[in-house]
Amino acid sequence: MVSSTSTSTNTKGRTVGAGRAIALTIVYIVIYVIVSAITKYIIESLLPSFHIFAVKYEVYVQILLALAFGYLIVNGFSSIFYYSLLSKYGHPTAAAIRNVVRIIGIGALAASIAGAVAGGAAGVALGGFIGIVIGFATQQVLGQAVSGLFLLIARPFKINDNVNIVGEDGIVEDVATLFTTVVKADGTKVLVPNNLIIGNKIYLKQQQKS
Figure 1: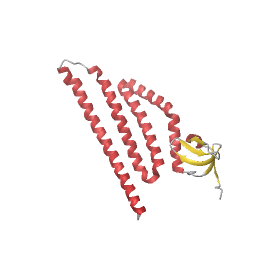
Figure 2: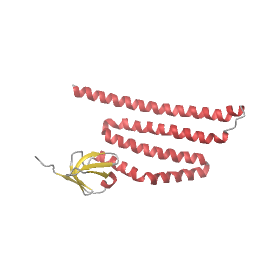
Figure 3: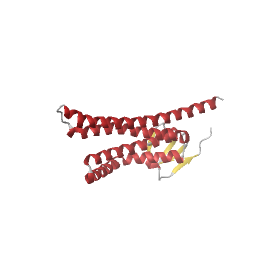
C-alpha cells in the first residue's frame, strides 16, 4: 500500500513538474515577445518624441533581451525533456539528456544571435563560424555527456558492480553525465571520463562471496 502510494505521488510530482516546465517556457516566450515589442516602440517611437534618439542602440538592447530570455527558454525546454523522460529512464538518464539539450540549445542561441546581428550573407557566415567555434569548445564536454547518456541507457554495468574499465579496477560508485566514479581497493576514487569508456573493453568481475 505504501509502495503504491509512493509511486502515485512520484508520478503526480513528475506530471506537475512537466506541466510547470511547459507553462514556464510558454510564459517566457510570450513575455519575451511583449518586452521586445515594447522596447522597439519606446526606442523608435516614444523616445524620439522627446528628442531622444537611441535607435542605433536598439540592437544591443535586443541582444541582451534575446540572451536573457533565450537562456530561460532553453532551460525550460531542457526541463520539459527531463520530466518527460524521468518516469521511463530515471533521474541519471533524464538529467544527462537535459544537460545535452541545454548545451546544444545555448550553442544554437549564441550562433543564431550572432548571425542575426550581422544580417544577410555575412550573418549566415558569422553564425556558422560561431557555431563551429562553440562546437569545438564544447566537443569534449558534449562527447562525454553523450557517452554518459549511452552508458545510462545501455547499462553495460551498474552501481556496485566490480569492474575493470580503461585499466581501472574497482567498484562502480556512480555513473553521472560526464564521469563514472570507480572506487579502488585502497579507497581511491577514480573519475573516468565517459567518452573513454565507450569503444573500450569493459570487464565485469564476479562479486566475491563472503
